[in-house]
Amino acid sequence: MEENKLVRALRVTLRLLALGLAMAGVFVVSFLITLSMKTDNPGEVLRIMFSTKSQVNAPTPKPKPKVEEKISDEPKEEPPSDEKTEPEEESEPEEEHSIDPKWAQKLERLKSIRAAVDEKIQNREHYVPLEEIPRSLRQAIVAVEDSRFYSHKGFDPEGIARATVVNVEAGQIEEGGSTITQQLVKNLFLSQEQSFTRKLEEIFLAIKIEKNFTKDEILELYLNTIYFGSGFYGVYDASMGYFGKEPWELTLAESTMLAGLPQAPSVYSPYVDFMAAKKRQLTVIQAMVRAKVLTEREAERARVDSIYLVEDAGGYMSND
Image 1 (cartoon, rainbow, N blue to C red):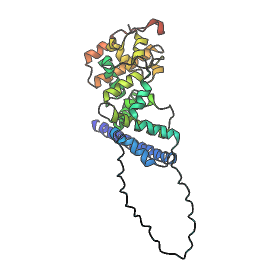
Image 2 (image 1 turned 90 degrees about the vertical axis):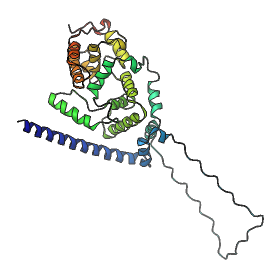
Image 3 (image 1 turned 120 degrees about the vertical axis):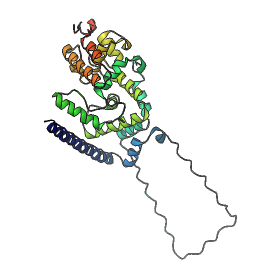
């Protein structure tokens, strides 16, 4: 019996890996075709995408000065020629290589990813530094949204396979396949369009951000830009809006409820459906136990602790 389960699990894993490789192949081919249609120099685009910050900003080497030839005062005698010289044909101006304006903007963003991120968050109110966000909330977000966050490079095929298995076993969507970095990219730069090209752009931008930001910087950006439902963007607005507290005042129970909202904010918002939010909170707590950042005793306390919502925002509720 145990052997059959092992064989079945191995088959599922192999199929998932094959599916992942096939999808990656389709993504790459689709992207390269689109790239070749949009720009005359796709090689330059790819170079910028995969270059590091130092490579992109490296100074262009200065050309060596030309050595001037000595000009003789004596006129040079040209041999006589019987052939009639025909006027030279004017050469046609070379066709300039142009890049679609939308692609030019995307390339500029890839070249200066830090400047592009700073531009998006510079006017954001109530930006909270990572050290002022409770450790419990940070751990909860990583455990339920992207458990391999600190080991992948922006894109995580293994995480996609694992999330698929978890969701199949649960019979519902409990974990997403996108990394925290990919979600940050979507929040800052991309539309909701569903296409291979947009997905590939998301992956390339995520890789670029991973090369230019530390993991803690990425997590801080994510927590300050993610949508928590009920009109609350960022951890500060969500903490004040739901619980009437500064982020650093959140309890473990409140942190785990907040961490469950980004997956489906319109569904899990406690002002929309408190019981759905509570059920999602239990999923977050279990993910933290699996990640070994919570003991069973701490998890049980988080499950039973009361949660009170701000009255004037959506009514007073608790899980008492």
